[in-house]
Length: 232
Image (cartoon, rainbow, N blue to C red; front, side, top):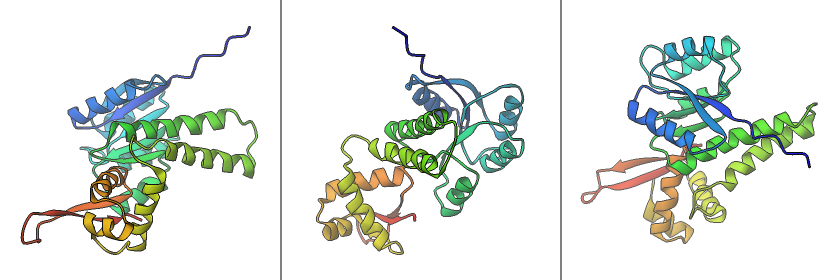
């Protein structure tokens, strides 16, 4: 019987100036048997130097770094036609940063602090895209749609434990309907019919995944509370 070939091992470069975050990123990558960390760099300049002599498949990169930030580093990577995909891991949760990253062709965008499950979702999204591309010799509209849709569906199927698609959709839709408003968890709970405890859990997930913004409101006259709104 013919043995199946071994699964491809993807080489990852971590570009992060915070040693603690870099260590966490490395540990999270190493938890996935399909990836290995081939290097770590503290800034964009050293990353570009590393890429001149080393081939990598995927780069996990921060935005705010000394010497050369993540966006300029990514522009240089594209300009030099370096064949590597990029997942941004950053504290930058504003719309302009997200749009810039999307324009530069990132695989995913993770906002700190992120969960282990969300990090693994990003890695799985990359694997799904690579497998779909490797199995197709000729691309037509149907095959292109398959690659994009299968990646999206795979990502949606990998919500952390306790996050259900139906409940997530109800809360997300309510945020989008009120996209210009800041809402409290209690207001969301009242309008959706979902318990406040559940709403808080789902809002934490949405904020971590960059699909919602969260701010602390200190002007309550009492205990501060969280305010939320959609990022899109």
